[in-house]
Length: 206
Image 1 (spheres, rainbow, N blue to C red):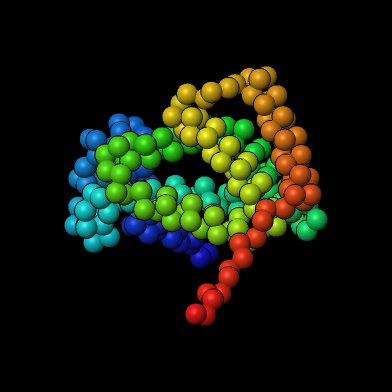
Image 2: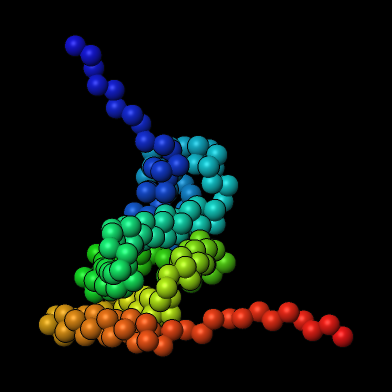
């Protein structure tokens, strides 16, 4: 019989996972490369082969969270098959995902705030994500409506990630339903009164 050979996980992935777990457990301020290497089961030299500094590792931790979040909401966008309802379903899916409390279940998302306080300069992956999202939204017919409700949902997720959800229980469900109705109304209004297009005027010749 042939033995099943288990593939070893890449060292880089093991190190990032270990860093995430340690940040969740005790915060970013006390994180050390030695502790991460021990938790990942690698030598410090092995860790430094991939991450030359603590800042480099923390930047990768942020990128890890951003990419997971981005992949999940892009699944919502990709699942929309009816072109006539694309914008409505995109907003509905984004709102639903936020109101179900995804940021509450991802305890590691709170680590982002610790990292931001530790060194705001490490948030470049977050800025890159929002730029990519803005570029995606601009290509949609009702960009201003989509972005408005995405930002509303982002605000809720922000407080959830901090562990202080601003609304819960039955009221949260009611607010979600109301936001969904608002979104449908906003799309209808946007169809009647579309956003003005920016017209580039050629410079007059003197």
